Amino acid sequence: MTHTLAVIALNKPGVLARIAGLLSRRVFNIESIAAGYTEEPDVSRITLVVKGDERELEQVTQQLSKLVDVLKITKLEDRDTIERELALIKVRANPETRRDIVDIVEIFRANIVDVGLETMVIQIIGDEQKISAFTQVLEHQGIVEMVRTGKIALSRQPLAAKDEK
Image 1 (cartoon, rainbow, N blue to C red):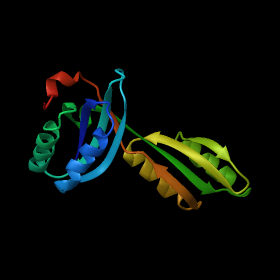
Image 2 (image 1 turned 60 degrees about the horizontal axis):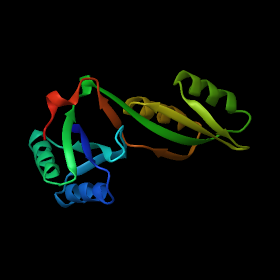
Image 3 (image 1 turned 60 degrees about the vertical axis):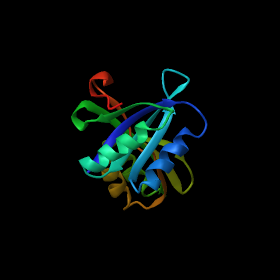
């Protein structure tokens, strides 16, 4: 089972490395990790997706809460969370297949961000299932390269009611 954690931490050099190092030393599997600035310049928000049962999740939370720079840890519940990922996908696109690719892009509400002589680069934003379905359809066109972010997420409700730390 996967769990999404929002970790609020001080925006200092090495904090992300300490968090990732702590989890890897404890043999917790990180499915994805995304970090960025928040509305406060000295605070970062790290979205972690970890795999494990409830006991393992509790261990992850306890270990993270021991780090001095970690201010708050919140488990984000699927039903109360807005989640997004971003993918950039370069596909083969010769003149005969371009129209098919454009049709697929429109159906998935993606965007073409670059067109070359033999390739197109497509940007898609959505949940994990949408991006996976999109890449499955594009495989028939010939994916040349792909890069995908980890999940970012925000709670629909105030975090204070669910704080772990």
